[in-house]
Length: 303
Image (cartoon, rainbow, N blue to C red; front, side, top):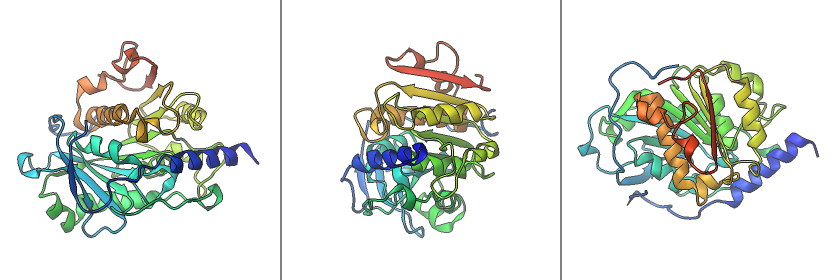
């Protein structure tokens, strides 16, 4: 078995093995714990109660959003589209992570329907579908259904793409599209040889926005991939590592709360222009750098 194939198999096994079988059904409320785009940034919100619901007019996707939109300004919530671990058509694994991100004042549209469960796969059967993320972004920013569902609160000028593991490959591939303003990938990176449907490291040259790569330390099967991909990036970027999180800890494990906080800080910085959030990543004394087990390096970014 080749090294890339073995790595891909372990990534899929680790991701599918960590699925949280909870939260399916109709919308329910919960309460979890280069430069930004031009225009006035929306203020970073406090932790907000959220709902998880179907995306009206976009089958096979789930929305995580603040529950009471009437308390928020029009056009104030940036849009984040999310690719799941194993490129799965189910977002159950990431409920805590995605709910936490939405609680920070984001509209998150994840691949997979509200009640869809993951289907076991193998590396040779697994295909990345960045087009599904771009379809979600277009739906959230252009469709009448989304405008009605979000009551005009979506900020259609600020769009981020996010993914975990194979879903991170989807995010990196989708991040080359002009509509994307920020990219984040957890426990991910293109393999040395094209995989998951022919996606290879040559595609990194097409990225045009600030990019965050996060890994879970040496026990993360994507650890070296994230390091190698970061080295190849020509855009402003951050590489952050939690030494003990492993492949799924920041998404579905004990560190999931820290995971969504890191994602929210990144998007607050890049999409909202929040310098305090940016200070979590930038400089030798960055906020995340001072936390036990974390190491951070950055390039091309300033406060």
